[in-house]
Length: 241
Image 1: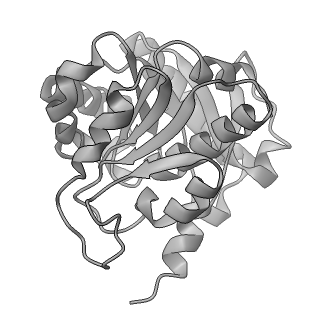
Image 2 (image 1 turned 180 degrees about the vertical axis):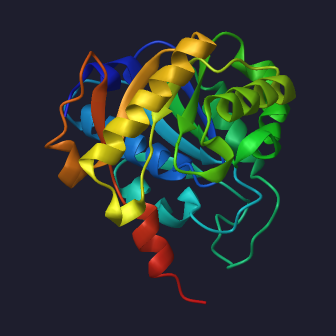
């Protein structure tokens, strides 16, 4: 799959920061994007190396580090806590090696943050390394209580920007009810995200849908549908406790 959205992600600012409300689907989007870029690299459409940094030190569920083996088998280097979650602990600390892909000008890196401004706050320790070489995406899920109105989303974007001193550069529509999501839900979420974009002066980069729905949905206008996996949902349901 080689779309304008993916070409956009494969070119320009190489540090892709993913933010959003708790439960918005940031991690599913981040992992799906990483796998899609890895496919582009295999096809010769991307020369950069790839990395995903799991920066979520708040929520012990749905962490991208749980798919480290799968991603690294696809050529995506994964960075998280010093033990990469291997010891089963939930350490609220990061591996200093995260600086390696952030500083490597030949590496395209996805930074999967925790929810809300509190989760995004961790970005501050890397601030001097971003320069102009970043984009910050905000994932919008209309069906979450904290982001079910335009005003609520605008307030959260403003708080994330204030906390991090970084600017959100684009929106990703990811309104869903997990497995029960319908085509109408995706289109309703996209319309809502467009309202947010108009109010905030931000572009809507894509609308996410699971692979089954993505094949059927043809939204009005230029917004593309990005097939999103259910990688973390399966990982979470299979998790041994």
